[in-house]
Amino acid sequence: QVQLVESGGGSVQAGVSLRLSCVASGPSFISYSMSWFRQAPGEEREFVAGITWNGGTILYADAVKGRFTISRDNALQTVYLQMNNLKPEDTDVYSCATLYSAVVVAGGGDYDCWGQGTQVTVSS
Image (tube, rainbow, N blue to C red; front, side, top):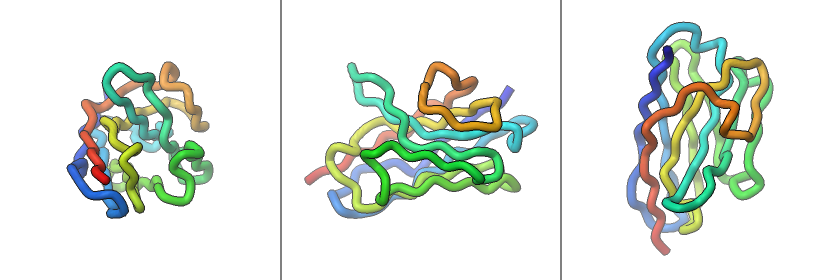
């Protein structure tokens, strides 16, 4: 089974950038589409961005289009989320997840494995 470990979160001022990383351990990384989700306490989990195994399909939530970029390095079994021009409303716990599929979907219930999350806090 795949295990996921996120890193790169932190507390920053609005307008700056952060890059999150999610390292996967286990077999068949290229068999998975990978996505980032975020969630605040007491709120619904929200899809942020997703990427298929070869980067052929990439999806973004409207709230992050033009500011966030998802990418992956299959040799390193790592998926990244570059977050630019951060806003206070981006404050959340960010988690990566695997989907054993050739497509990307926004529904969190479809995903197989989840990381523990990394906190991103943006102050104004």
